[in-house]
Image 1 (tube, helix red, strand yellow):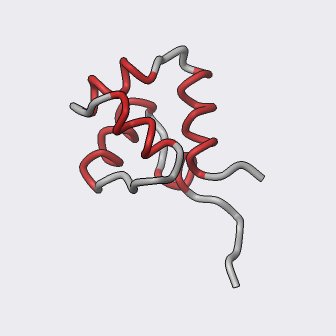
Image 2 (cartoon, helix red, strand yellow):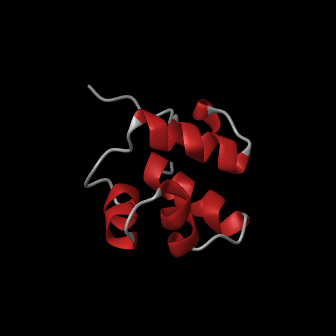
Length: 70
C-alpha cells in the first residue's frame, strides 16, 4: 500500500511535474516540499486545497489511504 506521500509523488510523476514546479506553485522551498513529501512535515489546509486544484482530484484520491492504525 502506498503512503499518502508516495501517492502524491506518484501523481506528480504521472503529470510530469517536478518538485521545483510544485514547490513554486505552493510558494514553498523545494526542501520544505521534500520534507512534506517524505512525511516529516504536514501539508497545511491551503496547500492541500492548491494541490487538489492543481491535479483536479479529490482529497481522498490524493491523501486518503486504506491503512488503519491501531
